Amino acid sequence: MRCDAQLNRKDGPGGFKNNPENSKNTVKVMFPSSLTGKIARVNAYDGDSLFDTLRLGGFEWGNRERYYGKKSLGSYPSDLLIVAELKDGRNICVTLPDPEKVYD
View 1 (cartoon, rainbow, N blue to C red):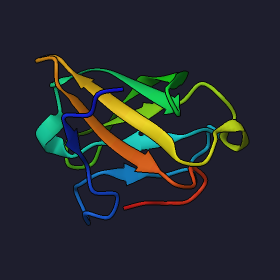
View 2 (cartoon, helix red, strand yellow):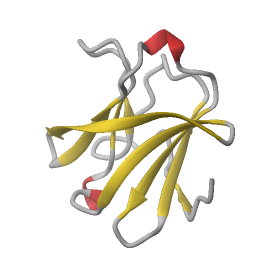
View 3 (cartoon, rainbow, N blue to C red):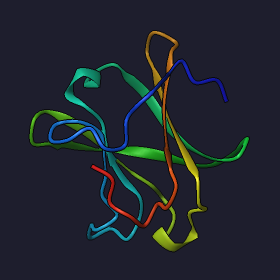
View 4 (cartoon, rainbow, N blue to C red):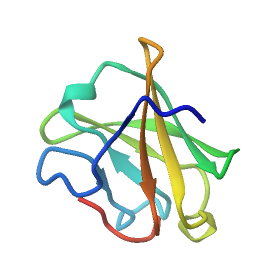
């Protein structure tokens, strides 16, 4: 998978966040508001293999798009690569060493 830019997992309030502590028992990622309206789709990869396609679940505070996985949280592999495919053709990536851990 081609990554044109990397998001920082720990960029503070209003930035990227992985929040596995949600009521849906799946991966939940939020993107910085600078990407709101620019994301075409979000996929999760295990190495080079597509593992899941995340769905848009609405907006968090700060007008940040949130995406949920479709699989149970415990099924996601370590070093999960999250790829936000932008409408302009670029791919913005972030790796989750442990998808069950909060990154903010």
